Length: 190
Image (cartoon, rainbow, N blue to C red; front, top):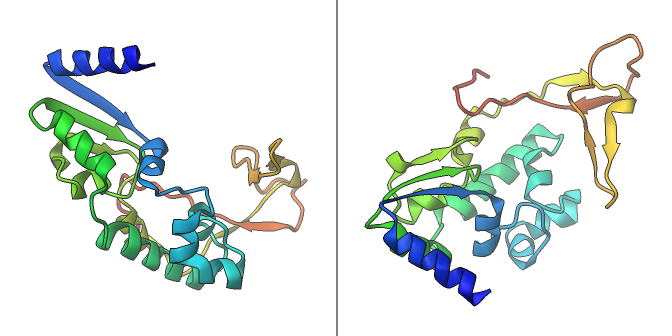
């Protein structure tokens, strides 16, 4: 393994330009885990866990009650964006690329790359920044009818709606689920 790391460091040192793909693994390396009920989550959102059973950031971001979801997102932005201090992971990454021509393509929406000193003009956040999601969050949640057969349960017990097969066909039941399509690349109107 060490030989691979040394080879990667050598390639990075010799490279004229660097293209970085960053996703949830980078956030997890910093301790920010969207899917976990870890110590950080319990410290920042323990009351949401106790009161509403919200076990992780993803559940909080898509909680069915709009007011609770708004409160959760407000606190998320406070902890993960407004009071963020660059981690050692981000400091190390910046040190590796700061004198290179670089571009970062990321699905992370926490703006940690920019907040850690990386050039925002060299970063493309495919899903947009988290604070923008909060600003665009409507006060009402659109409710659509979902075909019960579109509920998918994974082997580890997680369930999610397969939106491609959800709809308002005659076979749809009276069950409903909260859903709002979000295209964070363009402004939405409430």
